[in-house]
Image (cartoon, rainbow over all chains, first blue to last red; front, top):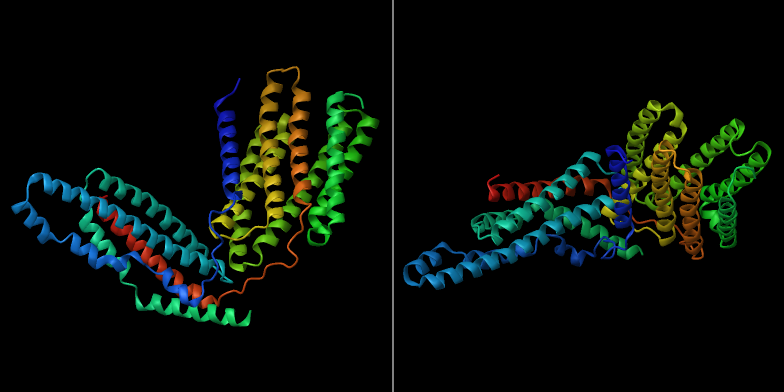
Length: 182
Length: 261
């Protein structure tokens, strides 16, 4: 009685209803407003600030020393703990990514003009990041050695460019002006 | 009314009652000032019910005149629905000029794509052309609405509870009409005896449900003044966006390297 086309159509409409429910559900957090200038620093990367500690924990010298002088059991335990730390740090990097994206969303929302292409590009970047992030997390969970790469990644996010800082500063000035007028 | 089952007549009467309740609430609460097109849509639906009642009495349920006039009135109410939806979306998104500019493009593109698909499909089956075109139209409206609501969610644009309920109702109803038409066609083609009664019930019941939900929502007040957020100078967007994108892109590249993809 039901052909493939009908079934496909039903699935499509069901998907549409699911998306509608998701779009209409109450947001888990309050809509982001333009933050006060004092909290603008929070929009930049935070977890990257712990980069030095992270680097120290993963110093290659320590690993070599342990391999020479410690038992296999201890080495295994250290490796497992390092992986755990790496995972937590990766989660922090994810938050930093989300924070950067959040900044872009606020700016786009409050801009009188947004670029279609730029917004689409960011949407794709976010989707891609989510996917890749999941893969790296899985890699770490399965005992992979992505630690070196995380160090590189951290350097990257942590080095907030002066131009971005200047833009955030401008945003802060605007927020202050708005606060004064209201 | 010849040709209409008693149960359908009851459902129809119920539809008129809930629509009148919705219209009454709109005027009682003064929502008509803020939502003139939505008010017109509800009023037009009531007029359509009265019009169809007269047509069915005079020409019967299955005559060609009835068919022609009923679908003409349906086309007019569909147009009113589009206008009401656009009005609501405008109220939600227009204060955010950039997002609204993006939103109406999304609305236009998704509608055109789905309508083209619906048009092609309706053209393939002339016997069901009008029904399929109607289904395509409802589907286009649902897709466009969901796209814009997703956009609003992505940008965390606040949507008032009443607007959310009305828009959700429009979308839900359009989805059910699309499904009903699909199932009806299958039932009709397989000569299912209760096809007509089922079609009527499946169309009217969701409509009544939506009207009831709207009536409940419309008891609340609408925002007194339209939210007018202070917008940033365009230069900030032009400055910040490429920088953030560059950072996000680099992050992605590094993640790719980490995975050696």
